Length: 110
Image 1 (cartoon, helix red, strand yellow):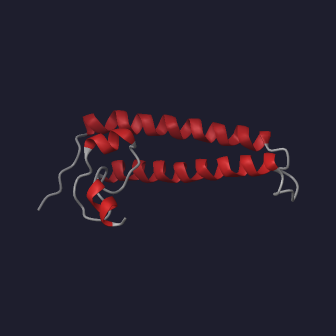
Image 2 (cartoon, rainbow, N blue to C red):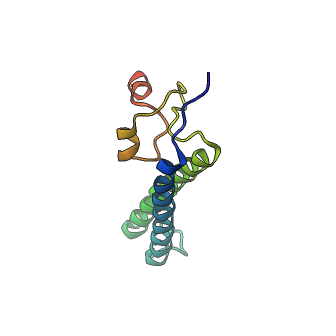
């Protein structure tokens, strides 16, 4: 059985969006590193440092999801559920183009 794939015409704008989002996040992370009042000290309990650290962690997680989505586009597996191997609903991908599971599998794991 041949897996259904999204046509490149559809994936091109998704890839472009993901790359632009990735670039914005990298720039935001650099700005946060400059903003961190305790970047060079062991003052992790300071509020400013904690806030910057939490934001950087979320950016890192999002960057990993973006890289995974870009890799899936490149290898022709974008939009395929990691759990069941079926197509992820396009509305779900429109909301978050980095999702890797279909809604049925998400509901099964709750």
